[in-house]
Amino acid sequence: MDLLKRGRAWVLDYAYVGFWQVQGFLVRMDPAQYLTPAPDAPEGKAPVLLIPGIYETWQFMRPVADHLHRAGHPVHVVQKLGYNRGTVEAMAQLAAGYLEEHDLTDVVVVAHSKGGLIGKFLMTMSSAGPRINRLVAVNTPFSGSVYANFFLLPSIRAFSPHDPTLRRLRADLESNQRITSIFGRFDPHIPGGSFLQGARNVQLETMGHFRPIADNRVLQEIDRAITAGDRDPA
Image (tube, rainbow, N blue to C red; front, side, top):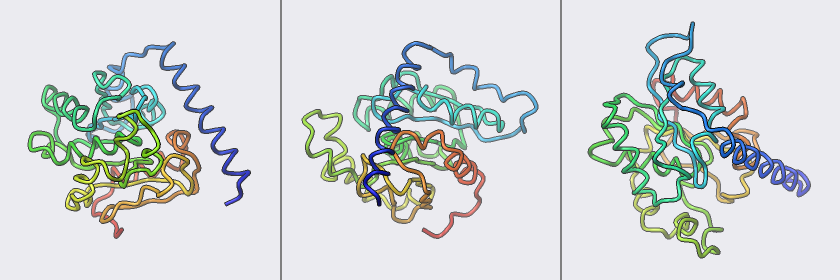
């Protein structure tokens, strides 16, 4: 791929995440507005649980929340995740508590980056797993990222391919049958890509790690993943 295109994608990616970080800090929205389906929206849609990536609040996924809310889904977020800096297991415990507290079933988890790892961890939990119908993950490092090896921060090093939690999740192939992994042709943070063995893998012509979350092509594939009946061949 042309280096100039990659560089441009990188710059636009960070401009995008910078905008949403500032927006999320300055404008504190109440996610309760997403719990009731939009007027004139179809009824009976499955509940959706949004899980953002590391250093992202739920508001980073507002483009997804808006889109799914308009489609008729009650959209849930776990505000206790904050900026999602805890371990995958600790964040999954918080999300599991939310599912139990609100007695949600047949849930579709829609996640970005680290959120996809949290979502898959949820699927392996005896308490939360039965409540989850499927996971739709966007740009998730299911196999880790080699870049994580160069960081000292534990929150980032947790994405190393050698991390015990990541290795445990990678060994769980059964859950992959209920996962759709959506990713682009260039992700500056996950050089190895987000292909997941046994899952429904969708590679798009998107570029970047953060910006694709609001791309119409990604939103359409999220819709397809939610409404899909049988899993497509990986």
